[in-house]
Length: 218
Ligand code: E4P
Image 1 (cartoon, rainbow, N blue to C red):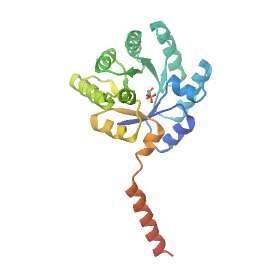
Image 2: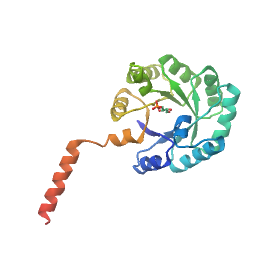
Image 3: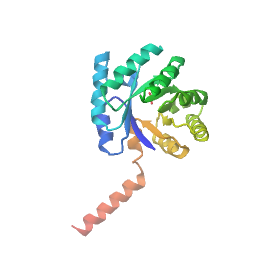
Image 4: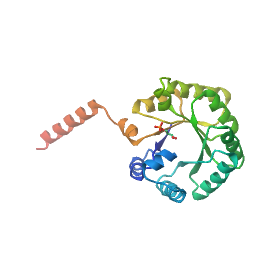
């Protein structure tokens, strides 16, 4: 399972990348705004900064909702850096754009996915990645992990090559469960990645080992 970080914060991207386990980055307009990155030119420049940190796929989201606009933006985005994957919303024109971009050999990430039906359409269009939003499904008391498992099963059964990129991850348990149910990629906030490190018995054990070492070497 690949690990992407879900942020536009350069320090957090560097910190995750320095761990040596990072395979890519996802962003969206809200994550850009959170970092105070506004205006098309600044946003495009920020994508280049991210691509220069991480050697892996970097999702850059279009903000047009019509086919022509999405295609125009996609062509601008892919010129920025070889790592760019064009993030396209799960709407009718989005599906058309994913198909057209796939035919041109451009990688896509179909975003804002909340149902298996949407996942089938995106795979038929040839999306490189599909982003079901676990946390936002959980927020309405449905089960986001069940959705990811259902999509992973459908893709396996049908031989679809689209990778299931589990998004809207809220905690380390989401990551572990995604690994169990067959997500190809998880995109996570830094806190959830670092949360995987934590276990009280590790801390207690390390403290004891170091205390015993110090006793023997006093
Ligand atoms: C990533 O591609 C998504 O945009 C992101 O994971 C959404 O996360 P959120 O539901 O926490 O905003």
